[in-house]
Image 1 (cartoon, rainbow, N blue to C red):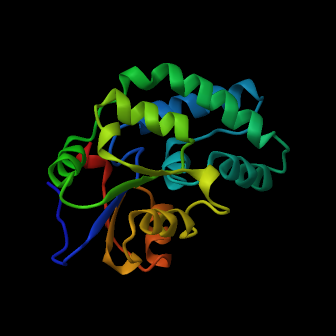
Image 2: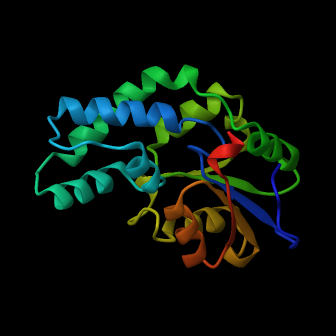
Length: 196
């Protein structure tokens, strides 16, 4: 069950991966295969992957490069990972409590998606679960200078919805996203893995 705070919210902003759709296990599989193809000399653990939920893929590779003193091409890893993931999208199920909540408020409140994934992936995941038509506003890394944990995505989503940041609720499964919502002056609820 979703526990929505008792506050007169005027708009709702949803993360996509791990929040609206249970795509994280398949994203992890695509990450591992892409890093193997790029001869990464380190283990990419599931715990590390989940700790970076919501962070732009190229930025994750930059963090790994710094941590391990290597120079793997961030764009190449992200592009190959995206190609692999696109083939897996038909297997991505919705996170039912969150998807049902989005359906229940559609047409009653302005709603948006703000995701760290690239736009074609977000649209394909939403479409595969019959959710794409719910969201007139979709914000992805190409739309902002800084990804999560910076507040840029959520602030842009609120601006496009025409609602002040303080009146928006963010639904998010990543710690970077929760930090981004805080930085944007928005309330948020954390979607735990157990909800999937």
